[in-house]
Image (cartoon, rainbow, N blue to C red):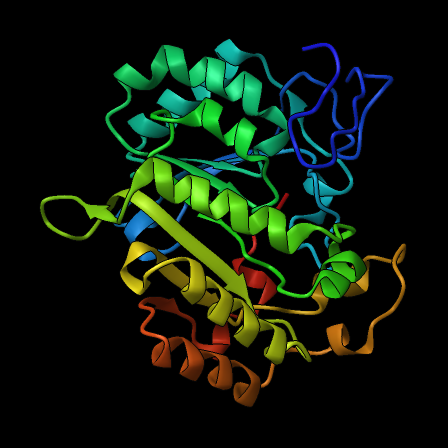
Length: 295
């Protein structure tokens, strides 16, 4: 890769240790953490946990990011493709139910090359866990390499997406990305016992304090572009202000300094049910920093 146009930012930067784009990362792979992750959706974590690989850097700058140390502050270790391959198969040996790439967008070219080589040897699904801010052209490089897409759909309002994630065009970009993901995977497919997801799209949405109307608009928009059984919906109530309050570089937003109320979450959940979506819905006790990996 010479100049980078992998994500919707299209920085056009020749990524190196001295020159980086919006993601703040060179072209070389940097891994912040790898682990068996027990707190993903049950159809992914299953019995032994997802084989989660957290990549450093991000093409979004969410002011409340819970993985801030690696996504915004770029902590992590330089990792060659051969080293990453060892990490992947090491996780499989530990019993990983899947291999989950987390915040991988800015490394799509490198990861696609690796998956072309090792996919025939993998006995578990590959999960692509991203913020949903993806170019369709870039996603096409992953066709038949990724089994499960796990994108966020963060905002319906471009005003909110600009304010909280520095991406005013997020809603339309995410819409097109989810359509492409669904084109590649089709409807959800499960293992023979019906407990583990083998293929499909899980759309996550984190309900933010003070933003329930935007969340409802996202659900209505999703219903306009997909059938309820096309995707699995993961509606999250786990927002906690701990990570936002650690971010001293952003403009303060009072609504993000508190947790979500039961009324806010339940009103969004009621709309999801009315629209016919099914999937995963969280209890209020999930709003704790204790469920976030230590980086």
